[in-house]
Length: 241
Image (tube, rainbow, N blue to C red; front, side, top):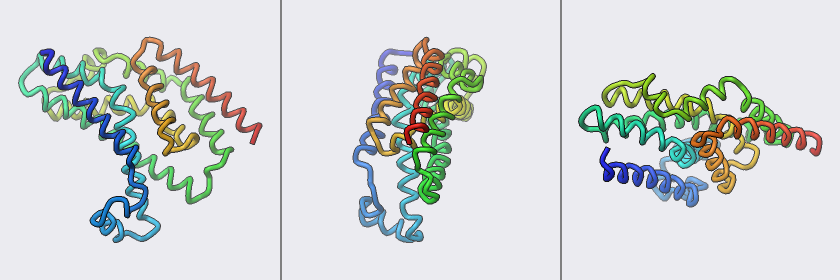
C-alpha cells in the first residue's frame, strides 16, 4: 500500500474521530439546540419522546469517537491486504469501516433504551452503580471477553480466517469485527452509566483504556487488572452507600 494512501487513510480516520469529538463537545442538549427545522421535526413526537433521538445520536457519535481509534490498526491491516488483492481498495476499506460502525450503532440503540429505562424507573442509584461495576469487573475475567479481546488484538489472524472479497464482503467483515469488539468492550461502555454518560473526561479515559487493552501485547493483563479494580470499586460503593 503506497505511503500516500496510508497517510490519507490515517488522516481520514483521525478526521472522523475528531468530528465525533467535536459533536460531543458542542452536543445539542434540547430539540431547540438543533435549530428551527430540527425542533419542528422533533415536535411531531410526544413531548416525553422528544429527547430520545438526541440521546441515541449522542450514543452513536460517542461510539465512533471512542471505538474508531482502537479499530484503526485493523482498518489499516485490511487496507494493506485489500490494496494488494485488487482494484478500488478505498471502496472496500470504507465498506469495512461502515460495517464496524453499524454494529456499534446497534449497540447505541440498546444503550439508549437502557439509559431511558434507568431514568424513567429511577434506577440510577449507588446500588445499581455498584452492580454495574461488579458485572463489568467479573466480565473482564470471562472466556468470552478473553476470546473477543484476542480477536481484536490480532488483525492478521482475523483477516486470514474471515476474509471475503468485494465491498459487500468487506461490509460483512466489518460487521464481524465489530461484533468481536462489542463482545470485548460492551461492559466497559456500560461504565458510563456509573461515571456519567455526558462526562467527557471519563469518555476520554475509557477510550484510552480500550485502546491500550486492544492495541498492546499486555491487553489480557490489563483486562484482568481492571476487572479486579472494578470489583473492588463495586464492593467499596456497596459498603459506603
